[in-house]
Length: 162
Image 1 (tube, helix red, strand yellow):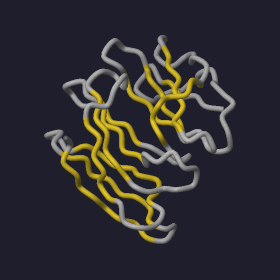
Image 2 (cartoon, rainbow, N blue to C red; image 1 turned 180 degrees about the vertical axis):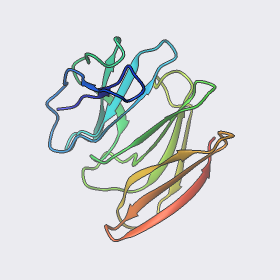
Image 3 (cartoon, rainbow, N blue to C red; image 1 turned 45 degrees about the vertical axis):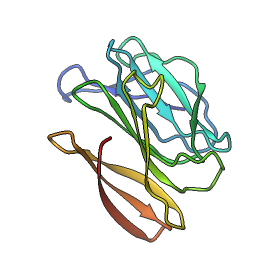
């Protein structure tokens, strides 16, 4: 099951949203706000070869039923970033083969994830490239992130946003 915690008072108190699900095995969702104010959630969907999608039109209180996207993913964690110009940056493993966590790529959408105008492989060396997490630079030219390599090393990368 997936949902979010919501605060209307800058974090002094929190409430839980309604949950959407179930999903298969692990969930690891990530979300961004669309240009029109909807919240859009992508989630790993183990064994499907694709990311799942849900959205909220009421600031996260309720969520639509899961839908399958056309974004290939082997059932691994992803990371979404919203840039000030409205583009969305996705860092993930764009491989639809379950369990194959390679390569690691940056995709950029300028239409709220309807299409991906830029798809760039960041690294494709052998092994499992998992759990990307990071930040976008203040000037929004780079995404700085780290990922788990083969479950025992941590690799940090700075990549220019296309």
